[in-house]
Amino acid sequence: MTYEEFADSRLAALLRYAVMLTGDPHQAQDLVQDTMVRVQLNWRRVARADSPERYVRRMLTNQYVDWRRGSWVRRVLLRAEPDDAVPVRVDHAQHAVDRDQVWSWLSRLPRRQRACFRI
Image (cartoon, rainbow, N blue to C red; front, side, top):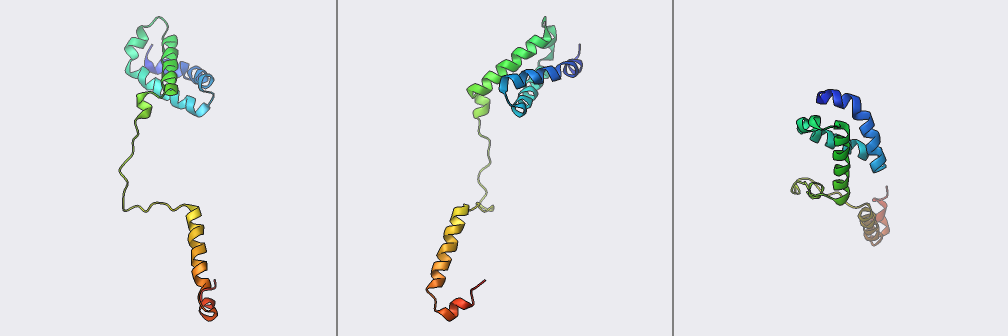
């Protein structure tokens, strides 16, 4: 049996098993995808097993346990250095504070000068 034949025949069952493990269909899809990449890389060893499906289910379970523990792979934080050219988004609350400050300043102006700022 080739990897492709195995994946075609058992992928749906592995996805159901992953949904049972995780309780979340989206996380289950990620789990199956990561596991199947490992299966493909180690296919010779998997194919030699007495029961390849049981071997892959065990890999899937181990991968899930690693996720739950927060294995080192998940702890690696990948991010770029902040780009100074990209402006940082302002908090919506700060926008309201700034608006109130402008209205406070405008209220100190004489009535005729305030009239030109009405929107």
